[in-house]
Image 1 (cartoon, chains in turn purple, blue):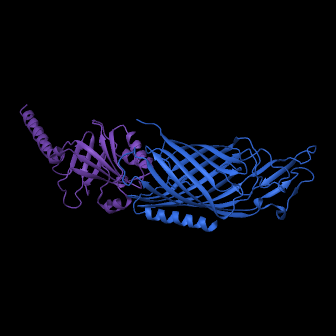
Image 2 (cartoon, rainbow over the protein chains, first blue to last red):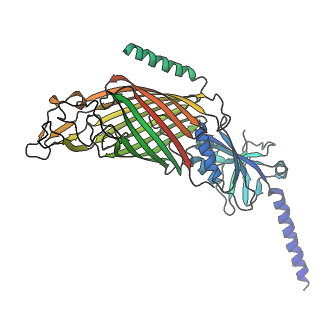
Image 3 (tube, each protein chain N blue to C red):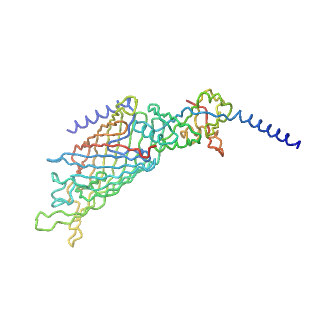
Length: 178
Length: 327
């Protein structure tokens, strides 16, 4: 019987160590908005087509297009379910255009929570890649990957991108260049 | 006359080139299709018509087109065409004395249907620029007769099939599109009434000429200078140069009768012989609420002759998209 308290103490110790480890690298963040850059877009009718395709997505609350910059600001419905961000890229393709970038802006509080490489928001997990060695102070990050970048940008970052992680829907983010 | 026309065309083109410095590019050409495709799961409705004056009347060909973006790269059009341009029979003494038949009165009637499929296979997009290339196939099935060799599937002059390629290049303030196409017309069978009323009509079979055609189109936005919102009416200017080379027709008289014979091409009127033409079509377009498209254009002759129309040809188009499956 004398061994049981020891066992419990050891389990508690391990849990504390694990909690300590994870507290440094996993934080829970809140998305403020997203921005999608669209290539090939030149007219207001085309811009409207992109907006309406984006508005069809269940997790999109509102879309604000900027035709001058050929960008759209997306406001996301708050949810605890995983957001399939790939659908944003598909919606742009469905409208007949190509994605230039997709960026995500977390609330300022979230920025202070990011201590290392990982961030969880709802059921999505993000891995932050600090390619340049300077993650900057912005709370805006760009999605990295073939789906979310222009072919030229993807080529630039391709060798830095690790393979997708099993488990939770996960995305690779890089500090925003914008 | 020709000198004035060339001067007008040159002035129009130079004015448009000057506008390049203040405008964004547009590729929603009134007469030609760009290589870009429709958005997926979007239904478009387009009404368009061609009108020209002939002797004492106005000829009009009108079409109602349903357009659908089946995939982001595949666009389909189905068009129903009606006109007072064609009759069910060939003219009296066709093709000797009445080709092209000018001034004949035909009731306005349904001609047939046109199907068009376009697949965009190359997309090189950048910010405010793109290069896109598409291939297309088309087919027309009409129940009326056509009296000239030149085939035209889109406006339902004759039945046939065709295909081609479209390349559209857009860079900052310049949009250029080039279409190259081929038309393989089908035979048309009909009757040419005999001038002696007591005699039966002459059965006629016509194989229209195969054709190669092209369109070179330019487009510019002239208003607004800066986009603010979707409610701004957009005004676009276009210039399209279109041309066609067509082979001579082959006319068989007393078709399927014992005295059937193929008429020598030497005896054809010009409208049934090999020919070519190049037209120029300046146009203006209004886009209301970033959806309703209204375009007007006028086609003038530059080189050669299209016997199937009389110049100038006035074209009107009204188009609207319906976005299906909204949240």
